[in-house]
Structures are given as structure tokens and as C-alpha cells.
Amino acid sequence: EAAQLLNGTSDLWRRMISEAIKYARYSTGIILSGEMGSGKGRLAEFIHQQSGRGARRMVSVNCAAIPGELFESELFGAERGAHNTAFVSRMGLIEEAHQSTFFLDEIAELPGPVQAKLFDVVREQRVRRLGSTLDRTVDVHFICATNKNLEQMVNRGQFLHDLYFRLARVTITISPLRSRTEDIPILAQHFINTNRATTRRPRLSTAALRRLMEYDWPDNVDELKACIETAVYDSEDVILPDALTFM
Image 1 (cartoon, rainbow, N blue to C red):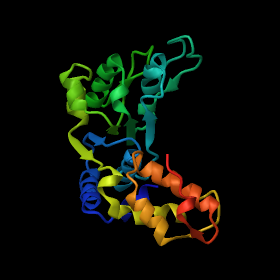
Image 2 (tube, helix red, strand yellow; image 1 turned 180 degrees about the vertical axis):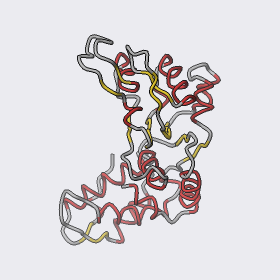
Image 3 (cartoon, rainbow, N blue to C red; image 1 turned 90 degrees about the vertical axis):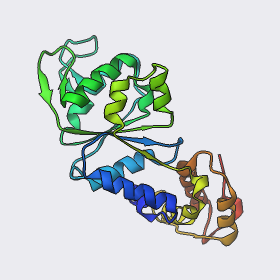
């Protein structure tokens, strides 16, 4: 999926990719900003692959998907008996990302107490499991993503200023798909070619492509992918406009 990022033709996309490649060689904190479905996770994977850490698996977490009471043990790990569900000692996701990249999606949803603890980890590159007195050294590149304005959240006291400063040394903005319609044909073809649900590879008709170009894509690249995958499944040799369904 990350490879598709090389295929954009718009100036907006090429500038973004150039910026991503430029900063991939460093381990400085990166914030990826963009609307839902715009491809922040794919861009994070692309940056990871372009870095010197690409041989290792990128570790990812969706900050909006973890229950509040499990946040600390998921990120930092826990020793046996540290809490009611800690039946065995386990490393957290940050330790798993040692010598690799840790991608925090929807970083704006990170609870306040965890923000403070994460700041210490980012600053010191050391992590302490819950219930432990031992600090473990880690080498982690932090990439975060958000569809919210973190700077405004900092000003309102909703996000820790020091953590934001550490994570946002570089901010890369992903433009919405409706602002770069030149990329739609090549992305659509990419989704046709890589559809794993079927071996069909139908041709996209001129009328269907026109309809794709005219749509405003409120859910961005994710919506385009879903649209094309459904159309491929419902088509034989040619994708016609009637095969296109939108959210």
C-alpha cells in the first residue's frame, strides 16, 4: 500500500513525497496532518521504509481504539501483578518498536496522564514498565498522525505543550483527494491492479473515470479504494459508471 504514494502526479503529492523522503533519514519527530482517510498510515509506512529502520516492522497503534485503563500497559508494558489483568510480564508497544518506528495514529486522543509519560520516553528514549523500577533504553522513531489541530489543542490546554514540541519537529500535511484530482486515475488503477479479492482486472471506462473525477471524496483515498474494490468485484471486462458506489 505504501508503494502507491510514489504514483501520484499532482504537484501537491510530489512535494509531500519529496518532503517525506527528505526527513525519513532522520529520527526527529514527525506529525502527519490530514483528513480522515487521506492516507496518513500509508505515508507513515512509506517514511519508515525510506528510513534506515525499514528492515524492521513498523509498530502501530490507534490511540482512539485503546480503552483508557489499558493505555499505559499497552504503550509502556507491565510487570506481572502491576494491575488486575497483568498475569505475566510483557513489553509494551514502545519496546516492540526498538530500532524501528512507532506510529501513533489519532495522537490527539491520547489521555493527558499518558501524554506526560510519553513525553519522558520521547525525550529520554527510555521506558519503564508498569510495576517496575527498571528503565529500559530504546531507540525509537516516533511518527504521529492526526486530523485535528494539535496547536489549537495545546493553546486550549488539551494537549501537552512539551510533548507536542517533541513530536512536531516536522509536520507534513496530506492534501485531501478533492484538491489533487490528477492523482485519481493512477490511484484507481493501482487499486484495480492490487485487488486481492478477485483475479479480475477490468478496464476503467472513460465515463466511469469521469464520474470518479467529479466526485468530492469526503473520505478521501480510503473511500476511493473501497469504491474501486467493489466495482472490480461487480464488473467483468470494463468498469462502467453504474458499478461505482459512494459512501
